[in-house]
Length: 277
Ligand code: HEC
Ligand code: HEC
Image 1 (cartoon, rainbow, N blue to C red):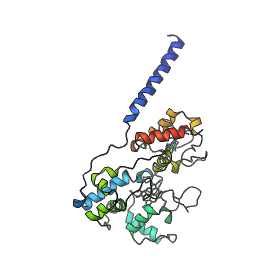
Image 2: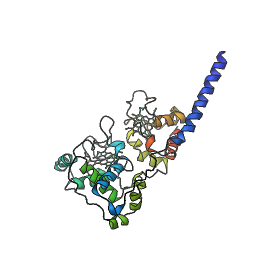
Image 3: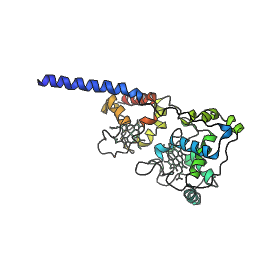
């Protein structure tokens, strides 16, 4: 075969491959909505704890940051005994919050993360005065107070500690926006981000990547990513981050981000990043 033919064959192969990849991509959906029949009037504490675990892993996006070292971007609260951990926090002379017990501390951490910043875990460059954790009762995560109670119940129960939050009464549950959706299980899915900026916050991209500079946080700054990588390469670095590791960086980007996104969120991110030149 002539060199020309080989080259042609090769680029044809590549084109086919890309076509195939883009064809397969729309199948990479976020977690399919699973029907979880939680009837609020018959809700048991075990259901409530299970709901909390689901919220922690999915809608709450907690595990994007809270997971075991070395991948974790936050204290490994799933691996720690919450009650002894929290007793330590409350006894810290620097603790300035208002919580008196474990449930209060977990709630405060979720709605006012900056109230107490766990030493060494503050936002880079703020000397532990600012928390990188988003307030999870605000958009885009927007957990309701019942959903936050469910997470507290889960975090207490996972170590065999006493659960001190009470089950919502059916009336209470109904008065909370979204409770019906919780009951049907669909609310346990994260609300899809509507803009690229929202998606960057929701998937914690911005806690590892500077977006408006070339500064290194955990990963490379993305200010000129569109000039460095093609759209396909950007897409691949999100879907399969370990396929190509940026030189000089650890393979620290979570490999399951795309599984947690809708196709639309992925495309919002890819388009936005490709335009950063
Ligand atoms: C973008 C990353 C991120 C996300 C998402 C996130 N957290 Fe955090 N969280 C942190 C960081 C970093 C800290 C430590 C700094 C601080 O104290 O605020 C923290 C601290 C905490 C603490 C205090 C831990 C301790 O050791 O005292 C709790 C409790 C907590 N988060 C719960 C949650 C829950 C529940 C969710 C999900 C609903 C969540 N976080 C989502 C980053 C995150
Ligand atoms: C826990 C930290 C972390 C999170 C969260 C994270 N990344 Fe990364 N990312 C990295 C690291 C580290 C690298 C470099 C190593 C590699 O190439 O995998 C990287 C590489 C990249 C690259 C390739 C950069 C280059 O110069 O080649 C892109 C693009 C990217 N990330 C986009 C994203 C987007 C979009 C999100 C959110 C959906 C995200 N990242 C979330 C840590 C993270």
